[in-house]
Amino acid sequence: MLSIQLHELKFFAHHGIHPEEQLLGNSFELNLDVLYDEKEEGFEDVGDTIDYAILFEIVKKHMQEPTPLLEKVCQKIVIEIKNTFPFVSEIIVSLNKLNPPIPSFQGRVGVKMVKKF
Image (cartoon, rainbow, N blue to C red; front, side, top):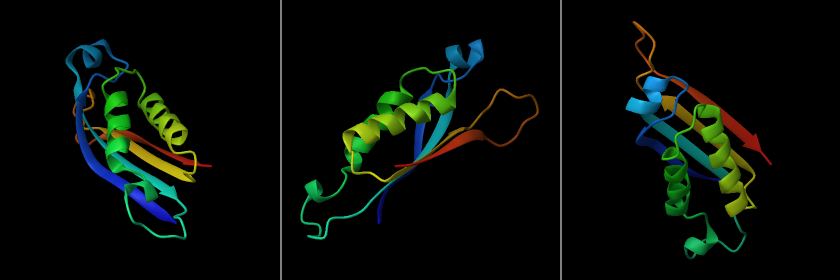
């Protein structure tokens, strides 16, 4: 089993259920792990693995689409990755809002989605 990882990706986006979040935006951090069984022939070029640049473009596209729920953002990312790379056996994506609009709150909030195929 091999895992392609994109971690600590930083985005500014307009996700959230509150009107001020949709208007003002927020900072987010995303982590992605994409697991699959590697080919027995080994690795000679990017065609023998999953191109992390393609994964990043998928993530970036969905982070740029304002969405009320973080769960929905994760779901869209998972679906597109699985459609692009059907041989993937598991996808783990976590999305954290770094400055949630909660009075006196220090920390971050987020969701983590684990999908096994």
